[in-house]
Amino acid sequence: MNDVDVMAPATPDAPAADLGPPPIGAAIRDRRRRLGMTLQALADGSGLSVPFLSQVERDLAMPSLVSLTSIARALGVEMSYFVGTPPPGQIVRRGDSPEYLQIAGVGPAVYARLSGQHEERKMEALHITVPPGLASPLSHREGEGFWYVLEGELEVWVGNEHFLLGPGDSAHFDQRHAYRMQNAGDTPVRMIWVGTPALF
Image (cartoon, rainbow, N blue to C red; front, side, top):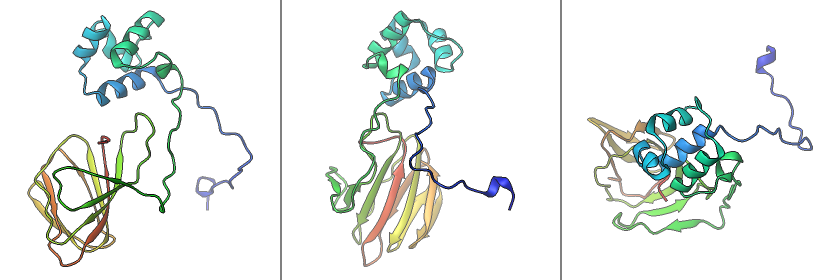
């Protein structure tokens, strides 16, 4: 075994390394996209030009404090949002206190949130119980989807392809392709669903 294969033992008493705040450009771009805002809309709201904002988001230009204040105001946050690391928010969910979601129009499936509630998260994770006979409508959206079957058999259609997933099987796909699923069996399907961007 060479050196790159060896993991150093954990040192719980050692302080965490300070990696510093994330690049300002990435924080601005992520916030804008989460709001569904175009660069033009951000330019209109901040009074700055689209070319300049594009350079800022790619860390090719550094905004002044006045410009950053205008950007923050247009994105509905304080300026400190871009110059410091946001608080971690909820990190751990306990199995004995699940958060069930009431989602209109999806039938009797049971949804329990697995993901945390920290600000600006980019993914959603759910534990879903799909009763026998339930089929989802054909859907598509931006981002990626990952499904992992724990129990039962799940039929999955992605684009023109059809799959049957059993326990231990997974599917990972671009959600811009139309997709749907169905439990055609006699027993409930228990599955983990992970998707981007965050939904709730």
